[in-house]
Amino acid sequence: MASSTISSKDVNGSTVYSPDGQHLGHIDHLVIDKMSGQVAYAVMGFGGFLGMGEGHHPVPWRKLTFDTKLNGYVTDITKEALQGAPDRPHDWQENRDWATTFYGYYGIAPYWI
Amino acid sequence: MASSTISSKDVNGSTVYSPDGQHLGHIDHLVIDKMSGQVAYAVMGFGGFLGMGEGHHPVPWRKLTFDTKLNGYVTDITKEALQGAPDRPHDWQENRDWATTFYGYYGIAPYWI
Image (cartoon, one colour):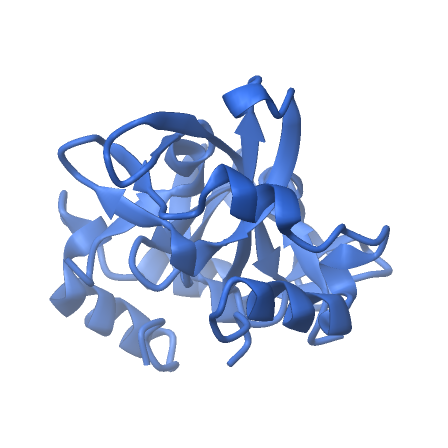
């Protein structure tokens, strides 16, 4: 349903699953482009996910698909992909060079394209 | 700064001002298109705003501009405009006919265009 919307309050805390239905983590919060209002990243929280320890990792919004049956999001991002993702500089939320590299790592166009 | 982003946690609760710096209300939460990740609406909360009483009113994200000096959002939407906005049907979050009417009322293209 392309026309379906969701409150940011309901997104935050949503569970994220792997394609085979394994619990991966949750969405802690979203990072939004101030100007366009486009969601740039979902920042996932992992409580000891597969031995990675607690932590926050941004993922591109487009890597998440809402699944109405699971009432959560599904992603094909693997543990290995997350661990290998480019480290975030302190200015990651406004650094487009980093963002371009980060999106490229996941093989998709940046959020502003 | 087109490349600047903000956490949804920081958006929620942000103050909204009129163009002349009057406090209008705050952003209670965002409503996001599940598929595209585009912010469709900012739902503003008004604590007795200009006699309107407490309430929530969606406004198009594009009607809000972040002002770094005020550390909040500025909108040119007036009390009269808000009061005259099309009433929300119960399915407003997935009703594109209503959304089209609503965006048309504010004179801007819908969020999916």
